[in-house]
Length: 166
Image (cartoon, rainbow, N blue to C red):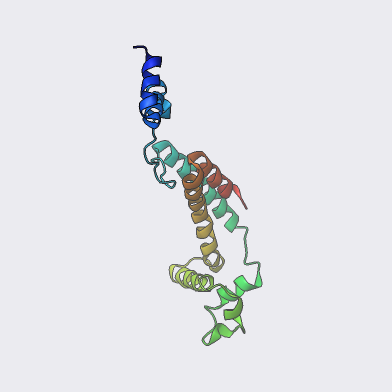
């Protein structure tokens, strides 16, 4: 019996099974696909990718460190957060600060200023360290988000853009 007549005979007996068998016989690409992996499953991080990320992070950190020497506390709220160390309780001598200040930034500024005074860092550098460290952490965070959502090339591109941004 030829293949066509065998297919026709099985189609008459059980139409759905015959079509399924015919597809499996004729086209292996039409076989049922196993369960898809999680959409958040990401390929393993290669050594090359880690090296490129380290280079991007080092260049971003270097650019930020060079820029710190030309930076100053420019906005009045940054000055208020930095001056909290020098004024006593209550309410840090600036009226209404709890109403407009983010909860973590004044505490970080105070901690870095106090730590900077203990270690002997210049006060302007100690006041700018939270922003410098947050900028470096942003490079890594954008790499991770871009890599997880779109792949390694997008992650490294996002990290490079963040490293080179002002």
